[in-house]
Image (cartoon, rainbow, N blue to C red; front, side):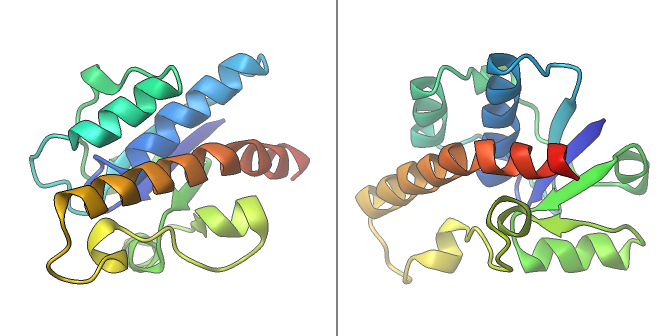
Length: 154
């Protein structure tokens, strides 16, 4: 099975979901599931240091991560496409592919996992940004077992 996580830049939410899911699958002995990530825009930029450090806290090493932008070729190779937000879902569906929201699979709710700029008010501080990154990665980490259980059950 091939699973793809999608967000905007592929340096925060989808990247975190990819690495945390791989770690969880390794832990439960289901490494035959292939997990990757991509972004709807994926403009070249590095992951925020807080993102990298928080993933390392969970024993994930994203240092070799390379941003990818979604394409029909990438999407066609997937058995399951998981979007972090409805805006990503619209892009995927406009390209002719089915997808589900992260929270739909994990918790049966149709809500986004918001990006930094979607959650914090304009003028946010670097500390607020770092705090939100940590909170979001913790949320994704805690949701992954539910997400995988629901995928396996279907």
